[in-house]
Length: 452
Image 1 (cartoon, rainbow, N blue to C red):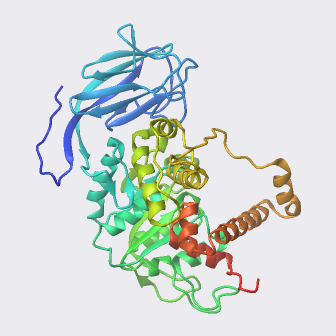
Image 2: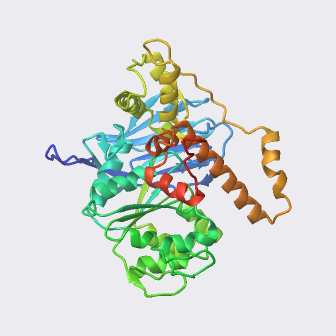
Image 3: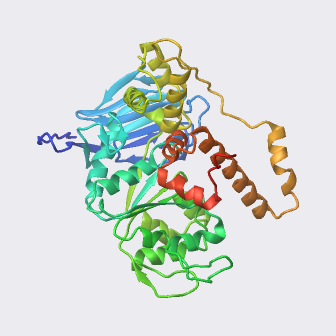
């Protein structure tokens, strides 16, 4: 089995070839996940978000990772309870460059190299646009983004909330030939169901009650630039054929009739949901999924790239100081170790908010952090109070009103906190400024007058 390396200029990505491999469970059942892998890094454990899920109580939720590098694959125990065993010895990590039998708890796993090769490209710079990351995972994504940005292909960005999906779309736009054109953000989850079609494709005057003037939709607004459809998994099934038609024909027709209009738009879609699973469930159209999934960009959660946390924290602290929002603080090794060991369910967004809060609350010259591993919860009486006046409505209407009430209250308080500084409120809440401007219009939020 060969592992090849290529010599390149300093400006080009680092490239090398790796063989594909397969994992075969010898005495346990695979709950889900393929046997054959040709990606650079995979995760194995009992939790459902692993690439290979093992239904075995002796296997930890996140047991190990196998990561390709020049010269072979490195296997790393992720702090499992029952350990990783090779040739009868417990190991923390090891290089795999030949077929090997691994033991995880009571399960045995056969690692087998295949003849098929795949190329790995890693960007040399630990950033792309406003995204940061020196880990191999992120540099692999940066190399892919640099290649995709030079084209007009549709991209689908998948990842948990807070991983930076909007930053990917922004970077693709900024590094493309469409940079002089508009970058339009449309959040499919932030618009009432009955208005999504109008907001996407526009409407003519009188198309519906309240449509007192014609309006261009997001597609027309993005003409000549990039349209970012966030939370595409929330798009109603009835509207999906119309979106597919717009993508295929590169033209839109406003609600209420009118002439079809040609649009020149590069589309980037994003979701934190599993669209392939939704296709199987019948809640997302297969043809639209194929149309969106031309290039898939999978963002890893922060807990799977802790080596990037020092760079991120340093960048956040520098930005806070540059904005005059806090003083210069050092970060001790112990504090950084705590930050790197935290699971960060809210990912980079949560880390940034935590650092900003810690800067304000720290008394000395060092950053002081207080980490709580429990997820925030609403008190039962808060939920009951919020729902009390809604039980006389149909479920969908009650849900829509409750969401609107929450959004109005949330953004009103966020804007109050920042003195109606929209850029500051967007940074604090992890939203793009354009998305927040859209929500302010949608919710009809008004800045209080000086007399109020």
